[in-house]
Image: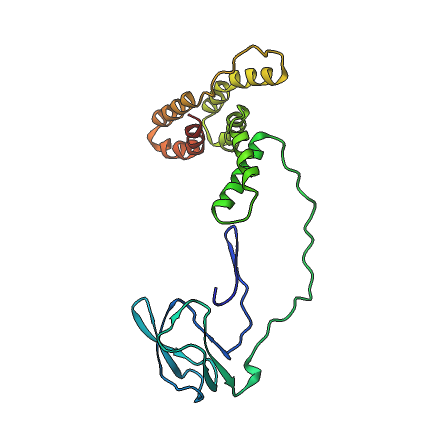
Length: 248
């Protein structure tokens, strides 16, 4: 950007401002340099208009940030991009330039590294985050990310592990009988999956994850709730409905 690099991490944004140099008269946004209002080599005062630009079909003046002698770098009629150098100022007060200072402090301790869980749900979350970063324009090993994403999606343990994690997060807000019933509905899938992975029942066919039945049970629970409690029950089961819907 014209003001300097902008760094965004999650929901936090930090503008790494360029040094303050009023001798560099740069375009702050795309537009057109319509006309000069001050000739080349003429002295200007701070806040004095020196040019007129057109931005989004609006005409507005450009104001000198400090006193000095104007030196044009672009002709009238030039198409401007953000950051283009329009003119320079031979400053009356060279001390008006504020330069960036090197950081001489130290960073806080980062703490111990966190080990990632070996569950396929954790690997899926990591691969999904990397894929979203690629879509957002960040540099990631595309082929490796796609391979990890498809590999975790094909793992039959993924829906079960995601369901266990989601259910444990909301179980305390569900009616006790509903929480127990939801856990029982996945018990057979879990039993067969563990047997197949352990090799004790290699010939047993793994049933599909019971996502449709889970959705029907959740919908019925909301409908059966008393009117005064229906809103709370619906809010509590919403994450489970969303997850079951992804695997239905």
